[in-house]
Image (cartoon, rainbow, N blue to C red; front, side, top):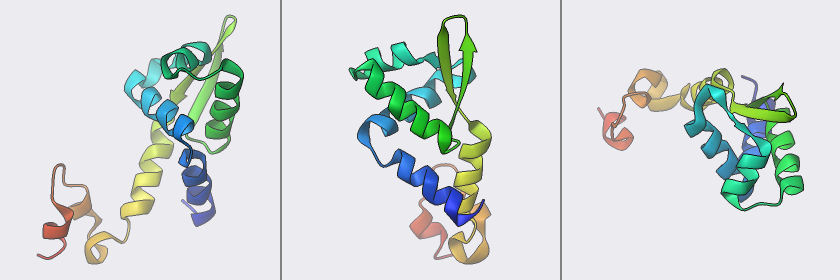
Length: 112
């Protein structure tokens, strides 16, 4: 992942409504959720939520697909994995495997 792409992703997540929608979509899984349902669950006006979802989609963090009259949004797992890899690439003196240890205290891992 290029730095410019990572910056776009972070910029898209740097808003409370977009971050909440993104986190909701991660929990929803690959089936995703309709934009109206996302707006309702987060108590955000539908037009404003559509704007936020479009921003997340342009950043590559969510994927939109039409299902009948609805547009369903789902988190883009490959893009999320790429962003995490970008963040951890230089972790712990070039040992990114230490950063990926689930539940590890990175501050302790990096000292070893």
